[in-house]
Length: 208
Image (tube, rainbow, N blue to C red; front, side):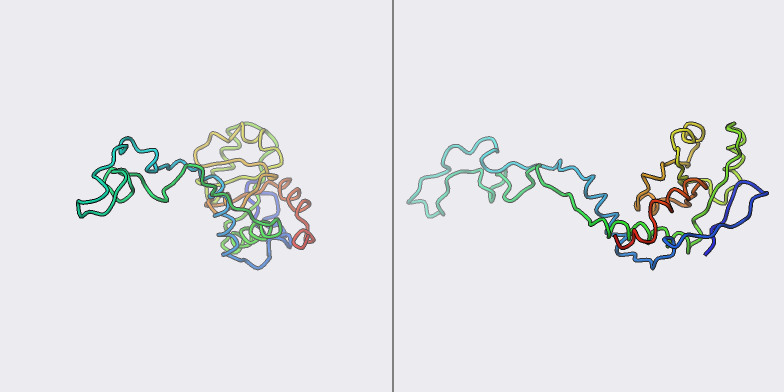
């Protein structure tokens, strides 16, 4: 499978896609990876009060015997209106999930394969000059210019130039993550980023 190249007219129009971009797509593994990320970001903020923490209820509502009612010790028991909550949120719940490294890599490769098949993946070549006007013209010539991610080996430099453009995110290729790929409308690699990514994730990394 070939990867389209955008940005410079005199460059060849396609690049050979590395093998790791052609693994069998596993949507369930991708979904699991996204769920792990979202759960690990989740904060336990909800909290309820137990009957020991609710204000009031210190007096026994009625005497133990002789009323015909069931014995009660407090009006703040969970079955009373205004009482405490039984088995409610404590505010210290741990929502974090984990995922093995092999499975995380498989999810990443699957996401890239899905993008490649959907033709939402490409290589962008920016001009050597670092003028913002020329970079804007290059981005304007891309098939998608909103909700896109550009992966580069030096995202700090490129991000300073085009990071403020609406709908464009510049991310270091070393920080590539599955949930970022699946949220983007289109994903671009610079040539250096593609080479660095391929060197980092060789074919053997699928098994080790």
